[in-house]
Amino acid sequence: MEEKVKILAFIGAGALLGSAATIAISKLLSDPLPINNQSVGKGYTSEAVQSNGLSGSKCNGLATPNPFTDEVVSEQLTRNIQFFGLEAQQKVTASYVVVIGLGGVGSHAASMLLRSGVVDLYGMDIGIDVEAIHQGHLFCTIDSSSLGVKVSVSSLNRHAVATREDVGTSKALCLKKHFQSIFPECHIDAKVILYDSSSEEEILSGHPDFVLDCIDNIDTKVALLAACVRRGLKVLSATGAGARADPTRIRVADLRESTNDPLSRSVRHRLRKDHGIDGGIPVVFSLEKPKAKLLPFKGPSGEEENPSDYQIVPGFRVRIIPVLGTIPAIFGQVMASYVATQLAGLQVHMEPVVNFDTDHYEILHQRLIEHEELLYGTSMQVEVDVEEVVYIAKELWHGRSARDLSIKDVGRAMWRSVNELMLVRWDKTKPASVSNLILLRFKEADEHESRSLEDIKEEEPDFFVRVTTVLKRAELEFGF
Image 1 (cartoon, rainbow, N blue to C red):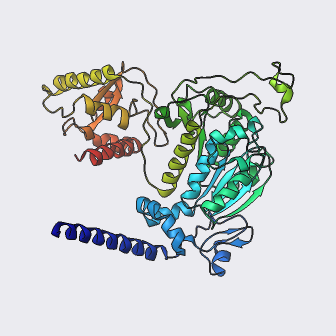
Image 2 (image 1 turned 90 degrees about the horizontal axis):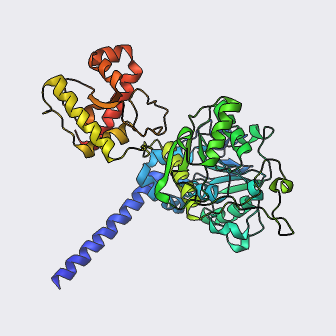
Image 3 (image 1 turned 45 degrees about the vertical axis):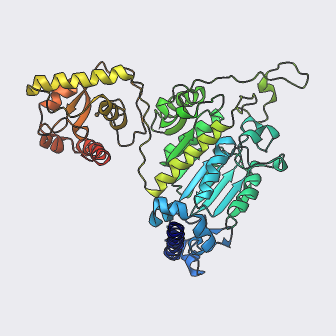
């Protein structure tokens, strides 16, 4: 009996603590959300919003009270705030993000962005999908690639929120209806527009903090990515999610590394040829080889015909690619997570694409031992084993020479050989530990050994900062 009383006492104490925590968070959330002058909806200034006694956003004349003063909304966002922190969550809510493409990938990305605190949604039902979060505004359009402007029965296997009742309605209006149920405080304005050079200004103006490209039409995709690069906008692009089945092989890396995807190969070629753009764009892609091809196109007679004869808009795909609905959904979730963490200022190190096997890491470890014995007469100060070499070579240096890495790199690393690579100490006065080893080519290693850190710091300050930042990460993650 005494034990039961103790258990009930513990449960009661836990409930009281939970309630107290919720009240404390609600109190914190009652503070006005700071307004970003550059992130308030089109045609509105922060002064105009604040003059109405509102610290939220404005959409087509509809003013939205600051969601952080609403107890229900505060509770709805509690888990995000507990994860990011209040200040970081405010950054997410105050951001302006454009998402283009509301099919299998885009609808899931948009849905999670909404659940992350988006309060106003601009919906555009078009020949090309666009969506944006602007001061908590989501700006949406619909993609006509594969003639997918409207929700179809076959799209229900991958769409984030569509039901059979939504079949025949535009994807933007479908999202509008369901998003209002998920987040009633949001305001949505659905429009019809086709993304091209004439609509670029309308869609990409307003200095968005991020653009999400979820289009599967090559011409439009290339035009959009080129426009984002030209405007200096941060953009995250989704490559082909169709014909794949392995969720563990989805990665975020530079466009240059999405070699297994036919769509990204074509986009990469066109960007280089037509716009002089050679990478520098992060993409979500799968390392998995496609398990199916585009289906043959059959006309009204049932006979196979030329798909281009049935194109309503030139350049848009008519043939169908088989899709396992889970994969585009995961693509969209990955995109939303990537953007949300970027907006919140949370540094997340995406797993790099490194095609080394166990033998490669063993070779690097053995070279390190031999180098230490040659240079210092002993390998006693080698404080890493093969497993730690995997972390150093893959996680820290992405399988590439430290001199190849750039601050702007998004996981560029497809080396399949360690023929010219070796690990050396960054600071020769310290042991060869996880937080003091860099990956270099043989010639670079020889040059490094002939210089002091002071020389590098003075002559190559950017490189010095880049390396010390990476090694600081190792120190924090390993505790030494």
